[in-house]
Every structure is written in C-alpha cells, then in structure tokens.
Length: 317
Image: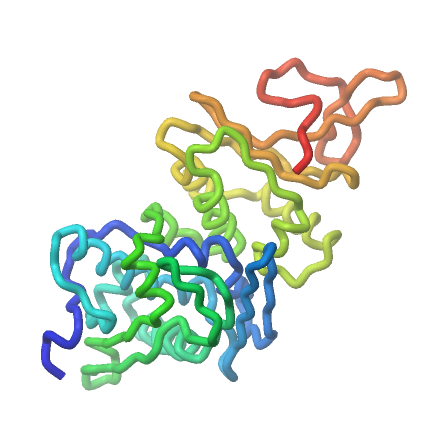
C-alpha cells in the first residue's frame, strides 16, 4: 500500500474530538463485562440498533480508539492537509494519548478493543452529513497490524474508519472533549460526561427525565434500579467528573451537581445555567404544615431554603 492510500497520524497534542451521534445515542456498552445483548434505542423517528459480535459490544473504553483517530483527522483538516478514510498510527502514541497503560496488558487490551470495534454492527437511520444511513455498518471497517515487536506487541496499526464516522468528520459533526475524559475510570462517569457535553452547550436550562436518561445511558436496569444507581453515583462523584461537567458547557458557565430527584412524581434531572453557575434543580414537596420543602437525600421534605438556585416549581418537559 502506498503512503498516499492512508493518512499518517503524526500530529502531536491534537485536541480530543468525539462524534456527536455516539454522544446522543447509546452506541457503546457501559458494562465492564462482555455485553452480548442486542441493544435498540428509539428517540422520535430515529432508531439505533447495536448488534454485538461473539466478543461482545464495543465499550466506552474502546471508543478511545475512535476519539484518537477522529482527533488526528480533524487536526489535519484544520491544517489544510489531505486526509484518508484509512489511518495509520503507532500503538504507543494511542496508548499514551488516551492515558492507557503501555505495558503488555495495555497492548492486549488494545487488541481486544479492535476486535470488538470491528465486530460491533449498527443499524440506524441517523443522518450524518445530510445522508440518512439505513443499512448496517461497523464502527470501523477493518484494522490491520502493520508491524509487531519480537515479543508480539503492536507497533503500527492501520484502521479504516466506517463511512458513518468519516461522513461525520467531513461534516464537522464532532465536539471537543476534555483531555481529563481519559482519566475517568468508571463507565457511568464517562457516559454522563458525554451526555452533558452533547446537550448542555450554551443552553441556560436543560432537563431530562430519569427514564429517558436511563435509555441514553444504555442501562438495562429497571427505572427503580437506575434511580438508586444514579443516586449512588451522584453521591460518589469524583473531582474529575465534576471538573469535566464544568468544562462540558461554555467556558463561562460553572455547574455543580446535587443529588438526583427521588420524587416519584418529578423524576427529572434539571440543569439550569446563568452567567456564573449551573446546577441541578431539586423538586419541591409540600410538608404537612403547608410549608414548601425541598426533598433531601432520603426523600423527606425539609424546610424550604431561600436560594436563588433552587426552583420551587420546575417546568415539565
């Protein structure tokens, strides 16, 4: 293969980029174990069906490979360079850029990630670059290990991106991600950042019901189980995800996450923004004495606090 038949990923410190469709829809599995379930997600007239291979669905960690490739291609386009759907890069560069281990286990995990990416098939009518894709396709068309070391470690790899991903690149349907994204070890935290990065932007307010959030998350849990899981996750939020959610919106907005809604009548997570802060809004529940109260962690209404950031009557979606 001539060098003109592939694009060499040699741009140092390219800004991480992710395709917006994978942020909007649960394409990647959040399970730490092989996920062999067929997943179907519907949002209005749009549907996404993800079919795993015998190795399981591609995971949110496998997505690092696509983020690395997309970042390199976008950086080259911004520099006015010619690009190709087939990209070539050094395995060490990918592992280093995505905060992965560069020992033997890191290379083994990378090989397994390529197998899941190439085996996962997607059936969707999501439009990219004004083109509605109705047939099935993979996240990558193929991969090839060009060179290996004597001990079997990959040195150079070629990856042919799918038409779906490459169309998104050419249409600039991508968003910049924080480099700290690769420091997130919990798949739920990664997915939370992706959803927030896609939907918040410069909006002053964004609300989503927990049932819809569960679907976007790609969780197989029941509504009740997911509510408990989200409560626990919000209580154990790491400083990294907090700073990432801050960065996922505009550089001016500053978010701070409170606990999720426990009310059975108002199961929505609200994000409200101003020029100085962004936060979740908790629902108000009347107490027996008639005084409005804010639900605490245990779902019990306490005395209302006079804070401008808490809304007493959140609007419905």
